[in-house]
Length: 178
Image (cartoon, rainbow, N blue to C red; front, side):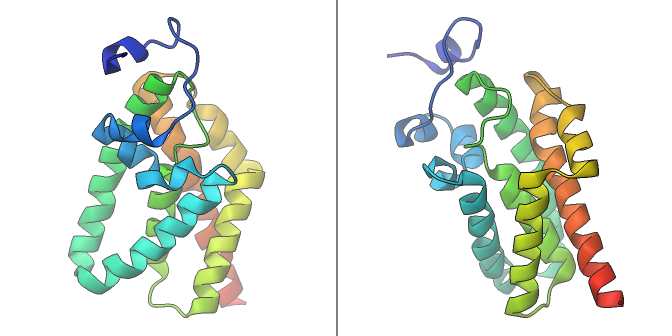
């Protein structure tokens, strides 16, 4: 059986397709893979975004505004570490099964727009999925900016989704303004 250190060098081993066993092998994997939502065989980014939406509804009802903000900040740094390590251990610089970036981006969107009704939340979800999947303009730029393995690549996994979240919030703000 391989240890974490054996599978962490992408030049030694072929890329790993994540499984539940891989996910539970290290806490970083469980976080980066969205506690299983990233293991979805179809559209893991969408499933991770849905997980982010559903979990935020619980978070906002059980934590103060300050605690929500602190959770977001801590989640960014823990996610950076988790995404960096998991991508390295999988041997893929930005695997689709890593969905912590979608989860944190949805949390940020909902944190900044709540309280909001179901249709506004659904609009935010759909806009975010559009920006994350289609990667227009600034999202494509952000996606290209930080590539590879290590801390830079781990930040890159998160960064393009944060830009997609910003674009989502900008469209929602303009929609509301007009």
